[in-house]
Length: 232
Image (cartoon, rainbow, N blue to C red; front, side, top):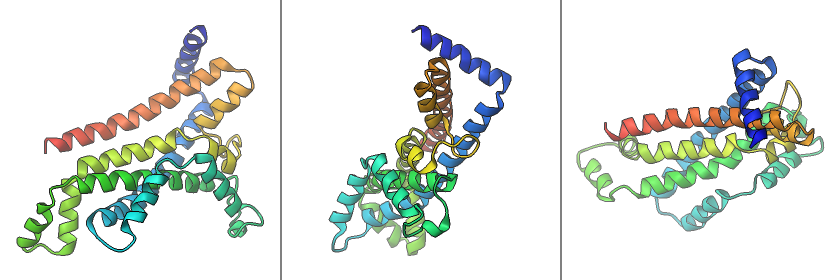
């Protein structure tokens, strides 16, 4: 408990004094995780909507793949991205390994099945008569999709929160493809692991507290938007 309280005091000090390194790491964490979440939403929501609202051969198999992907080990994703972007890999010519871009790719791959899985659940929880009623009123296919998305917005916001939670807490893949380079790819999770390895437990605790505050702040904002939408 003493280490925790010392870490809490250190976190307050770092935030109060505006420590440049901690602010840089925190902002980089927010940028990388935010962009990865955005990409996963752009991939996962349309994919989940397609799987929920259409019926075609192989659909159940694809849903099972999405559900499997929700629990995909991050280190496996990190290894796959590393092999893809390594110098002799198929995309090695892009020279993205050990850059924030590689971390975004890895985190987006981790989060996309999570967002897609939650989207499938949100869309399938709608009353099956709703699409028929909307089409009976003369709505086009695009209008139908938009209205269904609005109807399922609470579940879709939960999908966004789940996707963000999956990337903000990720460490294995980030270290593997980002390298934990100071001033370039070091984020709160990897910085915490480094601090523990160096025996700086107070600093590690402080970074963990800052990470929790950041994750809670974003999640609280999305939760307020979700609950406000539930009363709309």
